Amino acid sequence: MCIGDSITQGKVSHDTITQLSYRYWLWEKLDSAGFDVDMVGSHKNFFKEDTAHLLPITHSRYTKKVFDRDHESYYGITSKGILKDTFYHDSIKYLPFAQRINDPKKGYTPDVAFINIGSNDKRSDSAESVSNIKEIINILYQKNPEVIIFLQKLTTGWNAQINHSIDSIVKDFKKEKPELKIISVDMASGFINNPKRPDAMTFDWAHPNESGQKYMADKLFKAFMSLGDTIAPTFNPEIKIIRTDADSVVISWTPATDNKWVAGYDIYLDGKKANWRYSEGEKQDRQCIALVPKTEYYLKKLKPNTGYKIIIAAVDYANNQTLSQEKVFHTN
Image (cartoon, one colour):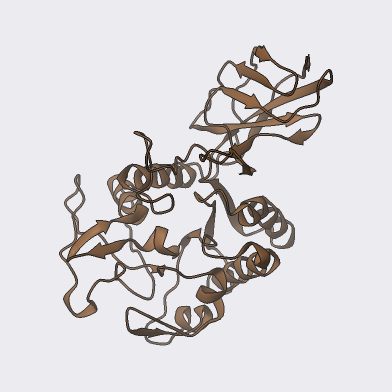
């Protein structure tokens, strides 16, 4: 089951599916891997698609099965909207989430839920957003105590209030409900929003193009295939200081290996995570902490003539991690 907003729903323009969304590519990967995939949710539509005349949908390129359209995502919706509100979407009335999932005739019981919600939430609503996401998860758990939750950090990295809360939400649930399988998936890591770049992953800074959709699907597939993995990455890096200035430093390190896949790297500067994702605009503002997808990082906004200690953590898709030895450096 996929839960979210426009990034998950996708879109139709002029009777053509112009935003297929990551749902299709994830379904195709799972189907091709031999899983019997039954997507569930309250509707089948892409945004602006005529419910009475659904467009022909693509088949799997590998198994030739028809894409299962069912989902629980709505263009422009907030976490509050998907959880609490009664709303109309494409002229169809929808009840609050708990009523939709428990409806005697149209309800459903997901075994796996991929959640990507919060891109439309206001920054001032951060506490409410966290509460809404937790309640969505609680409803899923109440419906099926064995449900597996993949909670995604957002590709819209400027929604820092959501992204900085994801790991805490996962940690809280593991403490309160240790039997619940809940995994965070870092979508902000390596995602390229700027549509003007040749390697862009969006149409318009927010909505993923095919490259971005496949990028998201690949991460979710790797996280799904890493369920039960308890083996941490092998990581004993050589850390190098490539360039040092008064207020910044460029570091590099040799890569980790893993029995499945390395998701990325966290960088601890004097004990605190410092692997900020920066905006792709001119100001290069800090957005959120996100895994570093490569083996080089530019540490900014440091103090002149100051000593620092670095530790790098290699992280896999099951969120197992291995720490490097400490490296000391001084700014100019």
